[in-house]
Length: 333
Image (tube, rainbow, N blue to C red; front, top):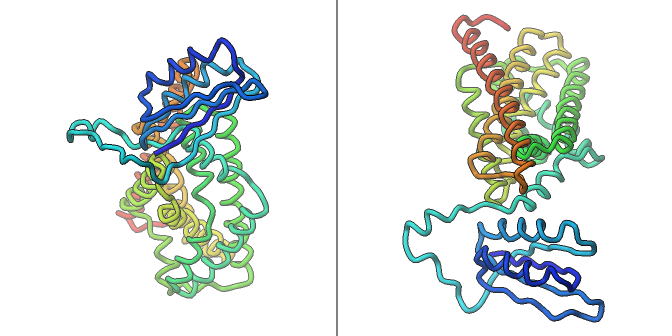
């Protein structure tokens, strides 16, 4: 459940605001009298998955008003007990979806380049490089836990679904920086450290097949679904990190050691995974109904969605065809 609180100045917008929000079907509501500063507080309680229409209505009515604030709070418990929908059909119609503003706050945090992001990326790269070379599965998994690559990938896809070019640019910069740090550190290690070419963990990142896009598509879809439904994304974040950081580290390490054929294979796997994760995440946001608030913003977002999906689709088909060719012939890319 969610508690939505909006504080706003008293005036002629009080009744239209109350009427518009009550149309969205809150479980409970309360409108206070004006306080000493002439401000009112409207409190609305919604089931999980509800509340977006109320927030949109509030924004539409108060956007031109100064000094208002909307806050969304989780509700751990409430009494009397809230009855569930009566029939299976009613339950099926209810779509669990986090609020657009909640998703935005979650993904926007991951689109920032800061010292913590750079340090975690560097440390996870060092751990995964030596874990791959030593054929140490535990070290590789440990590196995935601390790798912060989920944030910018999901932020880019979410921005594509909303047509938010500013967030898209910030997320692209963060993702490129993270991958560049991983490639650079692993390349530098490869210059002074001879990788173990007998390691299954390392060499498995140089094997590119038709199953590679399937794994990345599933990882991206699971991650986006967890964000869109408000579920914890930590575990699926590990899945995305598995798809991105090990092939990046393997490509850098092998290139630094002069193993260019293997490095190219790992680089192809990385490219496939980046494209597949972005494509599946974008499609999940679309099918889960993530949309901008206004009609004009939706028209722009629709164009952005088609462009992004078209580019990713063309790239995934092209890269998969290349991977299939090399898997069939055994040749190096």
